[in-house]
Length: 246
Image (cartoon, rainbow, N blue to C red; front, side, top):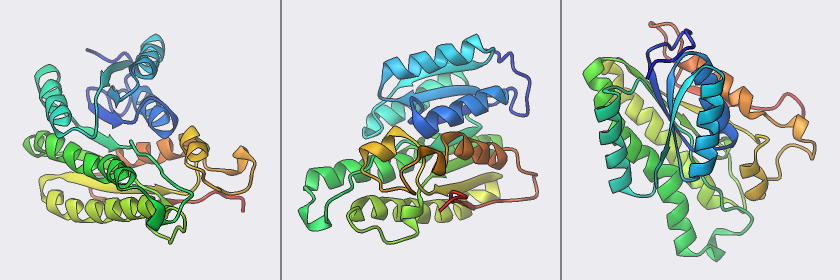
């Protein structure tokens, strides 16, 4: 599959999880515009296919791939499929996440804790486990984990979500040290309240009531674009993102 866009990422393959909506959608569109072939990974096949069509009609290249990111077997199969069809994975963006906010930790059902940790923390581990070998073989690559400022600050009423993002931050810093000698850069982007359905569904109080005062998904996409095109001698390990208006 050849991408008609000839940008900085031409001939590269990017895998984006949670690509169907919000931040993942914006990142996928931005990477496609930069010339990458984008593999759209998520649960909602309809949303993924609609985005694939949108990218194709704009002259880009993408493929929609439904995958249960809570399943180790499904993620292993995803890696095998990508290796067989594309033979490479230059960029991995671990964006998929869920929230379960609005209640104290002692009232949280164990099943809800498990679902949140499996999606927000274990899935990035499984994706890195599946795709980092491609990058090691190639001697280059970018892994970008989308975290949250909740992984930097106490968040009453969302302790589990906060814990998952603190964990994702720690995972990122450590894996970055494990992989940097192979020419692979692992970065984390931690935005505050973003104007997405996720924020509304999760019960985020955000910054004010006006969506215009929040960070936009395209703002996060621009940061990912910067990370995957940074100069060879530089390594940006973390980006914290806050809205300009209080």
